[in-house]
Amino acid sequence: MALLAATTDAGFAQDLAMHPAPAPIEVTAGQEFYSKTLATDVQAYRLGQPFKSSMPGSMGFPFNFAIDSDMLVRSYVSATGWVYFVPPDHMFRAWHSLLGSVIRGRDSVGLRVGPAGQMEWFVDNASYTRSNTVWTRPLRPTDPVPTPFAPANGAQSGGSGERLIYMGLTEGNRARVRFEKNTPGDALHDTFTFPLDQDGKGNGAIDGIEFSMETTPTHAKITVLNAPVSHTGGPPRQ
Image (cartoon, rainbow, N blue to C red; front, top):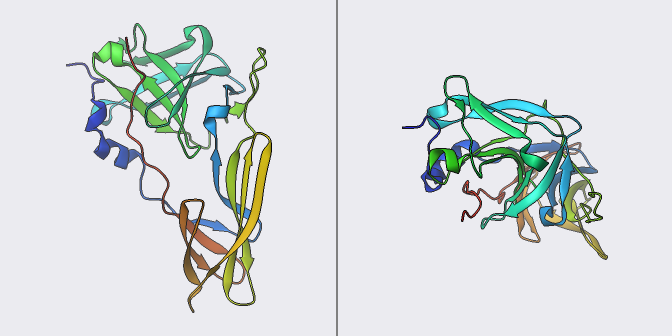
């Protein structure tokens, strides 16, 4: 049995482990607590430099991966809405210290962006394992920050998405939240208020985004409740 072997539908438990319950975000008035990038508008990302790291594989054993280019180009969109970006000319690697390379054929390594704009590194080694296998890990603060850009062919990138911004309290003990949504050729900005109980707690929903709030006169702890959790899936294979 190959060390790096897993099935995608194993997966709901695997996804829960990789995507724990949402944590509250502490903000003051004017600070953003939610953003969503319309990843389908982005054609490429730049990393600033090549990148090498590791991620857990089968049974949690880590293996290494490398992106040997500072550019990642959009490759495909999965059925669950994840957009996959890979370096050009197969400039990627994945290996284990005992097994050597753990990719072959049509396998790939790169970045994937979820429906809510969440970013993860991925290694699709389905050809190597002969099963539909994709390994992922979220970006860490020490990782290079992917930046959207327009490739030389003129394809458009970035600029579309939506944000929620905490705007403080009103005199009537209500929380103010600003909603901003930008799409090509259009922009929508509006401010909503939500009632709070005597302890400064309440719930809100805007454009299908649900959140809970714990507020004080100076700040708030806000938890986005409906951040999507997706199954790890790979590209369709011929």
